[in-house]
Image (cartoon, rainbow, N blue to C red; front, top):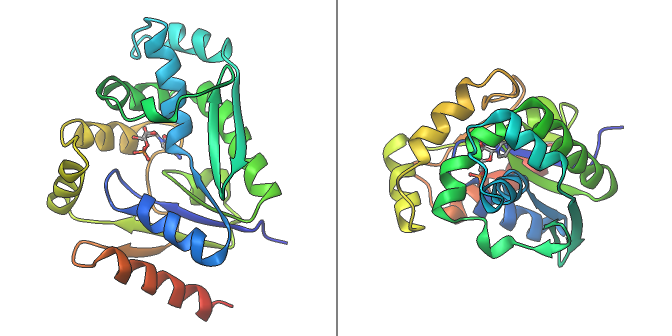
Length: 211
Ligand code: C5P
């Protein structure tokens, strides 16, 4: 039977995090933010003084770091060598480095294993870039949340970091392994002209239609 996973992929600042969080809360499922896992790896890299663009050095740091994913308060929490670093994951240096770290296949293998572990043990709404295509190709339902470039720039600006989004999307979409793309069987929702509440309502409607 299909894993109890709803996949939610899309570009940066498409609104998918807020949507995934709300849908998970409505269903009573776990909210899993896989971007935070790539951010945690990047935080460890930056913290060690390593250049995120130095692939061999990055891999050495990541392989020498202990990442742990637990489920707390209805969501996944990622720890780095035992420490909760969540509050440091949206720094400018992490924003700038994360797409370089995330394009290394061996880094992805480590984090994808954690993602599959959570998804197989908890009914999850999992958001990221490759959940429907790679992590859970057999997910119950797949959504791809999109928004125009203009709207996304504005949404990211509201969150206080407008800059590296375009560059991240470029690297994420063109990498060799697990590039950002909608799965062939994903339901694409363009949220450009929709409020968060409208997107959530639409998704709940689609989920009910599918039983
Ligand atoms: O979702 P968020 O914008 O926080 O993700 C940060 C970065 O992590 C993305 O720009 C991408 O490089 C990487 N990522 C990924 N695969 C995922 C989730 C995030 O490569 N499933």
